[in-house]
Length: 351
Ligand code: SAM
Ligand code: FES
View 1 (tube, protein in one colour):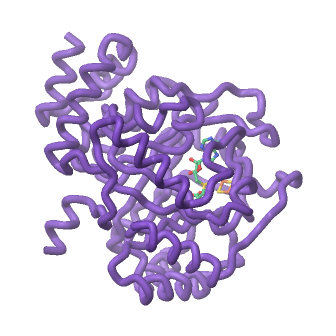
View 2: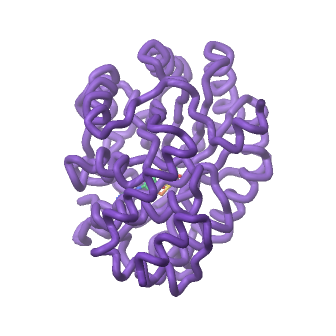
């Protein structure tokens, strides 16, 4: 019966909340079939091509205090850093030489980088590398700010909604943050023409299986171009220091369900997944993911962008990272490619 539900989803049918919940609850016997169907759909839309995005973690200053996050403002046991516009551009130049055609600028919510400063940085990168896409992941800003950044050339924006459950959102965040503003940001970004990525942590404290079913319904309705999910991992200097990590198995199953729900979505196998399971990223590809985000940050700052404990790839140079991933991915029967890797829907409208 559960396999029938999976089939219906794989064949383009829709599931209701109860049906998603049944799949999640009975995932044990469904993993292999879900992964196979997800990879089949991915291959139909994108071939066996895995897109890479070079991640530049350019600041670990953050004004917020999310209870799960290692770079939260209240963590005083952290050496803070900011990269200059020139340093950020240099990371992109190195990445360009290594074949990257998408750069993801990610950071805490650091208002040192005003909309104007950030727009200038985006403009510089786009002027030097007009064939590249720039993705921003810098949290909540005003609609006007997002508009300025879009005009400066930013193509995509990653902003995980973190949870679709209002009460759960409240429990994960301080009172200064709001579910409504998070959602406002996502809808503003979409209206402004960004390719948008939303997402959530798997196994964040207080998350239930019902919440996960709601996540899938939200993703189906919002239709993001990208979805970033990864296991929650505790950080020793946060209120959640004694919580347990989210499970790799559940993350993999959800990756497959997301692929089956939005067949042409861009879906990363995240660093957090590679942290809870040494083969997590390869297994993520096997579950239907098609994006990897190797680190292009200068090796001197990587240890300081510690969102959670034991984060992998904090000691390597960019070139070492991409070479390691190429070897790992070739074992999955997929191949890393270096084009911009736009969302299929976008490619059609751009043609
Ligand atoms: N400040 C930006 C934002 O809020 O979107 C981007 C940086 S934020 C650190 C990037 C993502 O890291 C968050 O959306 C969250 O899902 C994830 N993250 C933070 N702490 C984590 C943890 N302890 N375990 C796993 N993922 C975590
Ligand atoms: Fe920085 Fe959550 S702690 S955005």
